[in-house]
Image (cartoon, rainbow, N blue to C red):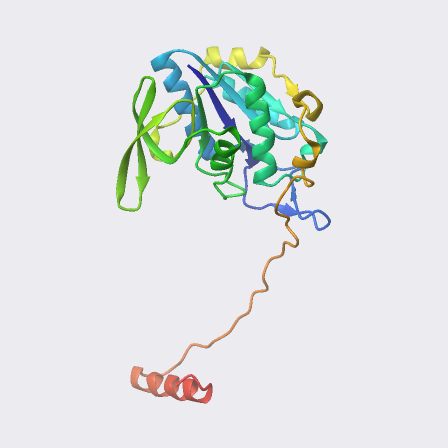
Amino acid sequence: MNIVVCLKQVPGTTEVKIDPQTNTLIREGILNILNPFDAYALEEGVRLKERCGGRVTAISMGPPQAEEMLREAISLGADEAVLLSDKAFAGADTLATSYTLARAIEKLGQTDLIICGRQTFDGDTGQVGPELAEMLGLPFVAYVSKIEDINKGMHLQRMVEEGHEIIELPLPAVITVVKEINVPRLPSLRGLAKAKSAPIPVWTAEELAIDMDKVGLKGSATRVVKVFSPQRVNRGEILQGEPEEQVKNLISKLGDAGIV
């Protein structure tokens, strides 16, 4: 069984700064980590490999420093990893990101299952999984909390507001998983040794032979026009006195404001 897990490196802090010129995150000088939701996707991919056999390929689109995260993925059980890195990919929204990932997965060859985390810690949209499925023409299920059985297809349990749904899914397919699906493992000594020396190929736009009008800012259907923090406005007052006096004072103020 050939499994692809899509990963993203995200800032390991909420104290991020925005470039006022590009309205994108300033990543220099910030500790970057494996997106927490993607850790559950990777763990589930490794568990399926241990259960059914096959290979797990971790794939990520990002800057050169994302290689460190991919080595972490290998230490956690991935068999191999591929980094998609090119200046042409910079500034991509979820649509352009999904297009690039889709072309890379096609280049990998036969894939039985693609697993993504529910959403990324920074973008928080949850759009890459379904967009990837649409571009690859594959069936898709979101919020998967348990893989009950797998043969020619999969029996899944997915979270919904009322509880859970049981779904039968044909393969190949794309799924996004929630944190309730498993508990990610820690890297083993063997895994750390393997990750240190593992080759991690870097695929550029040229190697993927992609349409340059569909990647990066040029291929993005959405743009961040402006990013700003709203000004904090202190309004209101604390009414003093006994409860009855406070109520009368409140009603009076609401009347003066034309609210009542």
